[in-house]
Amino acid sequence: MPQNDNVLVGFGYKDDAGVYKINDDTCLIQTVDFFTPVVDDPYTFGQIAAANALSDVYAMGGKPITVLNIACFPINEIDKEVFNLILNGGLDKIKEAGAALLGGHSIDDKEIKYGLSVTGICGINDIYSNQGAKRGDVLYLTKSLGTGFVVSAICTDFLEKETLDEASISMSKLNKYASELAVSIGGVNAVTDVTGFGLVGHLSEMMIASGVSCEIYLQSLPLIKGTVELIKRGINPAGTKRNRKYFAAYTAVKNGLDGNLLWTAFGAETSGGLIFSVSHMKASQFEEAFKNKGEPLYKIGRVLDGGVKDGIYIDIMKQNITN
Image (cartoon, rainbow, N blue to C red; front, side, top):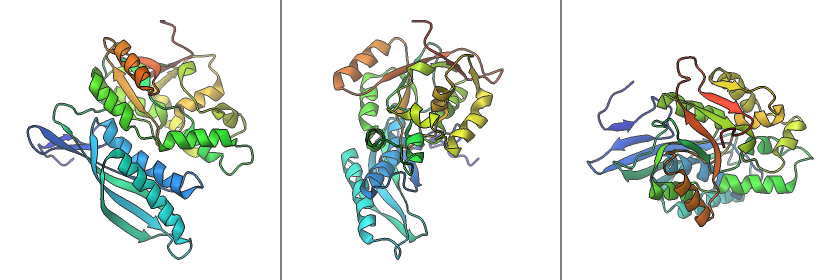
């Protein structure tokens, strides 16, 4: 792995973005993300792709400052208005983030792809990462799960409009507000966002990086309305199946859990929420602050000792049996 003394966060622990020290007070955060359409509406897709890319900076506790578009479009096969709508959707989220669009790069491609390269900034002592979760921390999630199942059901005739609308709003929402609120409160020991590896996958990375384990409460996981019904109808994306197969080595699942509900813990997400590992001394203040601001916050588990030596990093339980 290349070494540089100014690299404060690299890719050693699969963090959400890289962090580079530029002076004794300030560091840069860099990330890039793009993907194929997850919804039919081009403007909404642009919003989702931008929110997803910007999320990595928020997961590091930073503020996005500059952005470059990444656009792969079949320019001779689709009406150019579609491309304009995608870019405008992305631009609106970039403006909401307070970042400056500096340009970008486009190529002619057979399949639409769009996303952003994002540069953020944060104080040298204010960096978040997926390392640092401590025994006794409370685990919180800021968005409902289920986007991957909803996206996979778009071409079916049984996906409810209400479910699709809820998922689209969730995926389009910036993690800006949750991140800024958490920074202002303090007490956060580790952060990551929930995307393709799902809740269990990203939590596993956090636990491994922190040298601890955790328990999550299956019945406490927030879900987009209709998600379990989609699973019962056979909607189970390939990415979710891969997640469960791979991260099974890092989990211990209690007997008697709802099999359909269990899939949601492994579901591949698009532009999901943030997971905060918060000191138990700050938990009540954390919850109260989010409530007062009207920001969603869901208590989903707690951090434990051990588990590292035997490979079990996440203990999935039916509910919180300690409260």
